Image (cartoon, rainbow, N blue to C red; front, side, top):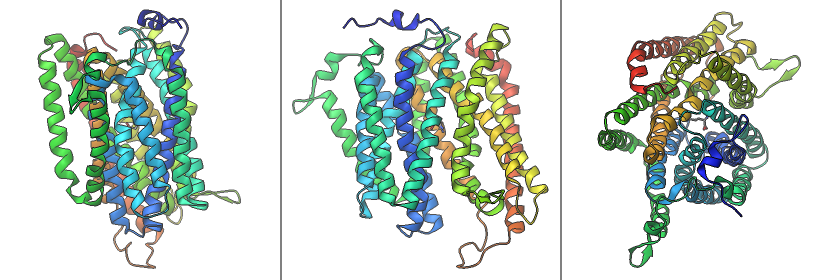
Length: 499
Ligand code: GLN
């Protein structure tokens, strides 16, 4: 079969390159696995492993943070040695293995499975996004729309995974839920394996010879990388078990990654260097965004359970199901509108650049938390109307659409080709920090006395605590948006016309 050239791929007609569909479905199934698994973690720890709320929260936070930190290494290895395609396949295989190990009904399987998932995600997550970026020429205005479409796949997978695995896991068997998540990753892997030839040269290893060269004891470099990544699993299992040491790991790791990026960029010449600095600033603000946004998996779960009226007519909805799937559902519904909006504004020469979209995202995020506060002011018997809750989430996901797909796209535009994987990893590292900070912010909302058995705080009292912290989050998010707005003229200059 004739291999497509990069020009043939990038000179596509219409709205999306056809290769985007294969990436859409591969990522959709991967996120199905990830979010299906994630929906069960907390409940499994509390109900099955009988961990305390506090311990479960801390382990959950460490896991989530590691999930987004390891892509720095996965992105780097892909740039330097493996290429994106091999990284995705290897990461996918590990994700399947991780899920199946978690399906084994013995307590030890839980941490081992999570350790494998962390490594697998590190290989998979940054590299599939990098390939999406490679489908476009640097100045193609359709790139953001492509990333928004891809992001819809992420959320379609997240929505279905959380719903199906969450339900099966909670109602039938935890282990069946974990296993089921892995089955869908196999579908993603087969999709990618069978169709990857359509990517032409995109995502191939930078040097096949280098990868095949013997490294240690006659072992090829490629196999050495796979072996070392298996050997990394016990390290993550250890960290999950001794989760209190995590802050001593993530902070130096973050600093080293930042210094390394600046060092590599400093050798590239002034223009490329300034673009990388602009990308790093965007990355820092995205970390702040996630720190507030990620309350969704933590404190907003508890708020939804304790203080949101979940009855619709005679129906009593599950707060966990509503809280965990509503955001993804809105993303899927809103994406076509945003895709249209950016293209329409672009035609009118009025499309804001990524930095301005980030400002918008932070302001919308602030507004969403303010809507929760407004809801609490009109609550009856301490219970907020579901309408306010849904409206808050709607605005929050509008913010997410102005930052998350836009950021992925901007990173691929601002980074020189040989650094895209690494920069994508650093983008996810900001999510990792966000997860970590989100846990700290969430702990501000821990209700006093909640640990005493049988003692339930009256709804009006817990509502006052949530409303207090949500007010602070609303202002803090808006303040971050304003700081970025002040930096905007400077950012625009550094981005040198890149949208
Ligand atoms: N929800 C998105 C995903 O799962 C983005 C997550 C993030 O970067 N924090 O891919």
